[in-house]
Length: 442
Image (tube, rainbow, N blue to C red):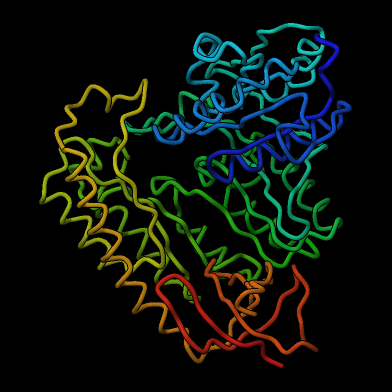
């Protein structure tokens, strides 16, 4: 390896919470191997990009960033592409970006120490590309958590659902769960270290299958919520097919389990859901919504929606709009359909133009905004507990998050200034479509 190469690294993360937590574990592994994290590319000997390929724009952004930095190769820097784009493109990345020296999919992160040894020995093409058959999960005691109060625990990796539009099963491998003992041990260590909020992660978190057979997902969720010192437990993302009534019962029985469920529907049309290979109908999805709404605690519901899927007619799209009205979501993440490599939908005729997709997306977002404008008003006058996340100095407001995962900006007298990570009751005085406003309660 060139002598100019230093054991310093810069890592940029693209994508979801799974990627963010993967990066925390990668950073911890690198530090354990004697590397030092730096704040910018110029200081780094090793430049890493942890990538997302769920949509085409996310993938292209990575290659644009790589292109911006290729001139730094002359300075002896090494570049690595990690995550979903790495697994998707494999060794083709070396051809597309010859200045890249490391390509590693998320399923091979456990082998990072060996890959780093190869890099340090001067190897200019180091790969870690596991196939779908791996049973290994990425567990490490060296996780470098970026937030001292809220932390992630991945309980299941991979995906076996094979939705026709989704590349995740091909980039993250088959579903493989950690043992409940391993998860609970990590939760207790986090609580002892001062963490008060834990979020359980998985591509399909409620598809969790304990290898030891001791706990269902709902039982594991409850066990984490009973860990001494833990104030809040969240989980994401749920797949409707594996969402069971006992999850709602667990939320109802334990105050530490946050009253929020993210349940992606993708479409309100059973015909479109069938083409998407989502494994449930509109009616089956609404049955799960009824379980949630029948809970003793009001539980916030959010979702994901794709517009313009191949074959989606105006009638199918209208069913998505009526679903918004019927469920009354507290938040929607909506996207235009984007063809992805290897997926079955790639062979479908994508006859809906981008202009029409944009129009449908705008309709969904505007309709949902009106729903939230009304629904958020119901909190005005109530007192809600928040976890303090920061302060907006320009507005003189503190930023908090409720158990329902809503942003609540509030004011506090100087002598009552809260600490980041602390919990406080806030009286809600106003609402907006995406946030609440209030004042701290004495």
